Image (cartoon, rainbow, N blue to C red; front, side, top):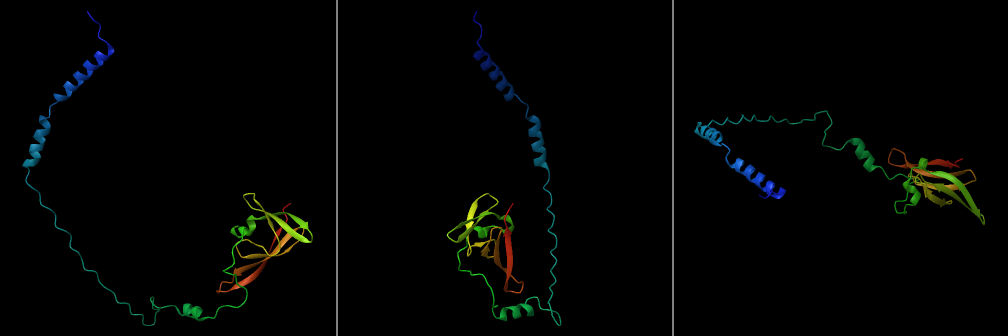
Amino acid sequence: MTVPRPAHIAAIASALALAGCGSSDIGGLEAYMDQVRARPPGQIEALPEVRPITTFTYEPAERRDPFALDQRLEEIAERPPPSGPAPDPTRAKEELERYALDSLRMVGTLERDAARWALIMTRDRILHRVTVGNYLGQNHGLITRISDDEIQLTEIIPDGQGGWRDRQAAIALAR
């Protein structure tokens, strides 16, 4: 007599399992399907009635016409371009103009042959060297003076009426 191996036992078990699947009773399912097919067809509900939309004609009379330009906008459009300071749109932006002024720190100065530079550190700890005439900050800040303890600059900011105005600002030496 031979002893069955594990591979033989697995094959016999799977054959018995498959034989059990083929003998399931589907008679109940077929009876239910016959019952559903025997039902009389139902009636489809009618679509709801679509009510007509009432239209409205806007008569401005003494009120403002929402489709006409506001008188104030027309005055602004007819106003001559403002005189005075204005940023140069053709000037190439410098690296430090990407940063807000309050995010820049002055960490020192360098001087050689009467030329003075300020050392500026950004929040991401990158060190930059600037001198009078360079720009920094997001408001077109032109460096006008560098001393041992601060950088002075003139920013050009909008005046709220379509023009521009100068504003003095400074960055003090970080201690």
